[in-house]
Structures are given as structure tokens and as C-alpha cells.
Length: 302
Length: 225
Image (cartoon, rainbow over all chains, first blue to last red; front, top):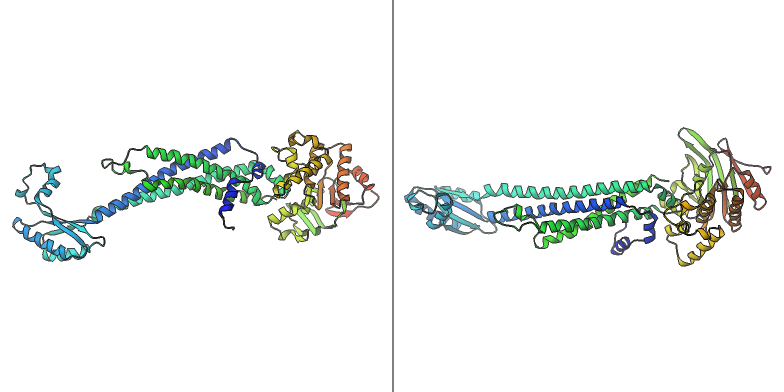
């Protein structure tokens, strides 16, 4: 195989107008190819948006929840203060803990307000004391900390949030994977459709190919007339499809906390540049599919 | 240039040609005759690499056909002009473009070829039809256009399969004249035909050998023809 350099690519894209005329122009099959490429590109935009959005979500959930943990101290009221102090001492000695802070009664009341209303006499209830832990980037050894706490602060329960975090991050990652699979399937379908269209075009032009072979045209020359056509059709179709898909994504409501995951679907910042990848990728897929179809067909002919 | 050595060709179960040996010398003029279905077209196809022999060896310009890739065969065909029995063109291109097709596919079309093309079309009497499309041509015009296309690359060999098959006597005489002239310019000519009058007409003008396919074999026909 020759290395496809830039000059090569330019020559391919500008083409040989004479070679192009060797194959008679086609009407509606050409439009069908363009339409399929556009539709597939449109779908690819959404699959890409899904993959990117879920990727962002996985990172965010992973990051935010991973860097905090909560220590809950349930003890008889008279021991709470002592155990809290002991726990804070242990935490201050634990590597990987950036800060540890006992929540004040007001903060605890705020946390409970959505359930019990603002007037809850919190001091009168045997409510556990919460300690908020912020980890360093290295994180702490949750298992080791639990062991130490069980010895020194019997009423302490450590919640490092992994119980909540794992399934969420896992779900987000799975969704991202699905988005990736969808993109692969979309381009695979595009390759299949273009192969079918190219085979139809090759069969319809059997006489043209026979004449070209008779007068000494090489396979590469004949194939290129077809390959160039389908590649350009796929690129132009995919361009239109990506623009429309991008517009549709841009017109979605902006991300809001209340909307959660759904409104976060879309591209952010440099993520929009991914749209530029779709038309050339469609072109590459069409190029490979037509090249393969043409070479396979031509090999069977005398 | 083209050499066949003990070549056999079979289709399905039956053998169509067997034990055929022939060496086409540069500048020679051959007629190939035989009853229809005897294998004249198959023989010609072997000569330009459209078919591989089932046994024996075919050499094109010194290379064994079996050793040649598809591109090698394409390059060899630029040195062999072929006029088919059922002439085919690219119907969406003009006659002039069709005649120039071998130049285009070999990337050799230049401005001075433009002049050659016009001369060539005049030579085969198609100057006025240059912009017509192949479906608009009569049988004779198609044959002449095919001949022009076959010779535009100035090939070393010209293989013509029943070039006068569906044209009248006057036109076939003219076509023969063109081929004889090409032979005088040093081209090797092989014409498959069952038109004995055409062969007789040629004998007065060139040193033509007559080959005959019968009973699957190639014979050199006598001078008594």
C-alpha cells in the first residue's frame, strides 16, 4: 500500500474530470446515497452527544462524590461530644484526609428540614453527630480508618459514598459505551449501504467497465471513478446531516439542575469540534467500502 | 509478439480448441476462418488475455499470460487494438471521445493528440460524426469507429473479430483498405471472418496467411482458397 500523503489526497478530491466522465451520471441513486449519509450523520451527532454527556457525567459524579466522605457518630447523648472529639483526633492523624469538620446543630437542622420542617427541636432528639471529611487527591484508606475508628470511637460509622457512587458512575459509563456502540453501528450501516449502492452502480455499468478494460484501463483507474463519486457523496451528505444534527442539539434546552441528565445532553466548548470529525469519517468509510466493492467486482471480470 | 504454445481451451466439459500453436510475427497479416461456433472469438480472446487457456502457454510480448497481473494485462492491451464483433462504446460520450478513450485511460491525451484524433476520424470517414453519440451510428459507422479506437494508441497488433459482420460489401472493402494500410505501416493484423470474398479481395493486396479452425485445431489453409 502507498502511504496516502496530502498531495495524493488533494489529487483524489479534485479528481480527474475525464475519469469522472467515464462513468455515466446517475440520478436518484446518487441522491439516495447522499440522503443515507446525511441521515446517518444526523444520528451519529446524537450518539456522539450522548457519549460525551455521559462521559462528563461519569467524571463529575466520580470526582465530586469521591472527594468527600461522612462520619456518623451515634452514641448516648452524654458521650457524643467525647466521641466526636476522639473521632476528629483520629481523622486529623489519618493520611489522605484534608479537612474534617463536625457539622453544627444549625447545619444538621438544615439537612433535616426538608423532612421534618424548620422548627424541629433538634437538641431534644437523639440525632447522630455528622462529621464531614474532605479527602486529598490521593484519598484515604477507608478500610484502615474503619478499623481504627472501631477501636477508638465505637459509635462511629464511616460512609465513603462509594455505595452510592459506584452504581451511578457505572451507569454513566455504560451509557457512554452504548453511545460508542451506536456510533460504530451507524458507521457500519453506512458502510453497508454504500457497499450496496456501489455494487448496484458497478452492475449497472458492466458495459462501461468492459469497454474500459478492453481499451487498456487499469483496475485502479476504473475503481477510482466510482470511489471518488461515492466518497464525495458521503462527505456532502454527512456534512448536511452533521449541521442539522448540531443545530438540533444546540436548540435543546440548556442544562439545568432540575432537568438532571437529560438537559445535559449536548456538546460543551471544544466538544463541538467533534462534529467536524463526522463528514471526513463518513468519507473514509465510503472510500473504503467502495474501494472494496469495486476491487472485488473488477477481479471477477476478464 | 503474441505466441501460443500447445494451447487448449475447454468450456464446461467439452474441449473447444486443442493443441494450438501459433506465433504472430511483427508485420504479418492473418485471416482466421472456420465455421461459426468453431472458436474464432475464443481464439482471439486468448490472444488479448481475456481468457486463460486451460492448457498450454500464451505469451504476450514475451511474458507468460499466467505470470501477468491484471495491471500487466491492461498495459499489454494498450499495445493490442481489438475490434469486437459486437462493438461496444460508452454511450454517454461522443464518438470522438470514444475513439480517444484509450488515450484518456492511459493518461496520454495531449493537445497534439487532438490533431491526430481529427485526422484519424477523417481517415475512417467519421469526421462529420465526431459529436454524435454511439447509439446514433449505423452498423458500418460503429465498426469504423471501433477500428479508429483500436488504432489510436498506435498498437503493435490489431485483432478484429468479424469486422465486416453486419455491413455491406462496399463498406467492408473500405474497412479492409484501412487494415491493409495499417499493415503496410508495420502493424500485425489478425482478422477473424467467414467472408471468403473479403479474404480473396485482400490476397491481391497483401501477403496474407489464412488460418482455419476446424475440429478444434488450427490449420494453415492452402493457397487454393
